[in-house]
Image 1 (cartoon, rainbow, N blue to C red):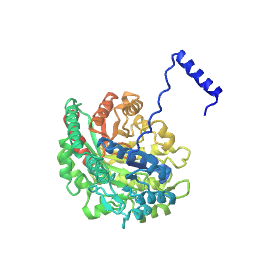
Image 2 (tube, one colour):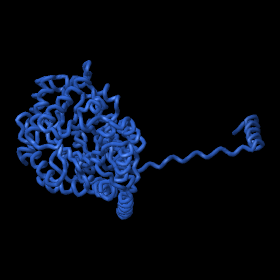
Image 3 (cartoon, helix red, strand yellow):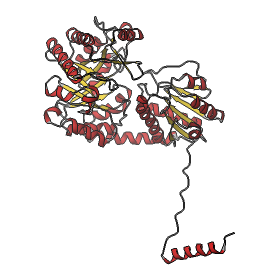
Image 4 (cartoon, rainbow, N blue to C red):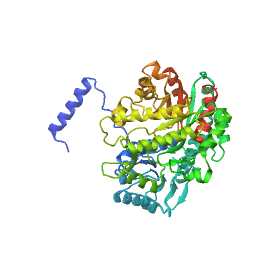
Length: 510
């Protein structure tokens, strides 16, 4: 019961508000309704260096679900008990190293009847929790979901070469199976068709630019149809692609019978990929550039990596653990790579050599003069290529932000352009945000002379970005306005072939 004094004070306050014409206090907003589905991104279950990658993939899954009309909350793997309360389906994105507490939270969620979808997770703990008998590593084959006691195991959704629509349909179908009514397949299909019609209309409204370079990166080194390079080249030529950067070599592998580099299992089982690619490319009228991973041991076998470690070539992280990055300060390593570049240029009628990982690892301390060492390496590569094939190009994939990349990875690619050491550089401008992309190309092409030596790298299907056909068109146009020589599309896969190139061919690449 209120005291007389308190009642008087309350009435006085009310009268004062009325006299002042004050409006009643707004009602508090109702708490947002928690979605029965959540997408969990890795924060605490993965190394700090991989968190940005995990965030990108989780955002991609969230976007696929949202586009399909499925309501899903984005959460991280911190306080899992609270994040998963009330959920019926949870997508786990990566989560490679879950803690005991995280696994316990997932078990409690499962005990309440919740379903899990593990996306490209190779955690033995999560595999055991879900009832997966064998951990299956990612492959570029068709995306697939294996039904397991706890839900579904999807080992290759991000690695698969399938188009994004195929991946989205799979994940949306799982949402509909676990939460009836969560996904309307007919509405999604109608929206997909309307979007395709709009993409086609937008593509037809574009205009070509004569002489523009339209390059594509082939990360697999085996073409879109392994074993059938002519088919791959016919598709590229039909869609206006002028150049292919084909990943056939690295410090630890060669997809051709090299006398310098370790010959890959791909070459041993499927033959000389570079020779087959060149023959098909030249027959179709597509220039072929041999793409070599320089200071990186990726794709090397464990035996080869151990050999690199014994030679002192592998860089170590802060904890002293060897990484797959190689040490550019080692003169014997630089000599080894230069022999490989010389062999490539002399042995094969390549239209160019494309350098990648021609930089220090950002996490490693760099000696004084590191940028000069890297520039000297590029100059030596230029001399080797020019001596063997005077008309062949030397190109390089580079980090997008200059001059910060000089301090970070000793990659002074604007100096390479200014000194005539490269024909073109391809900054990896893998961003989805239009304003960020425009800012990048504006800074990169700060002079007309430099702009004419730049191919803007577009992350059509990259870890950092996944572009719609309309976004690709807009980024190509922004590169044109910056005065660039052309673009390079990452990467050659089903998504590029089925969704993007057909739209570009209608106008920009006509």
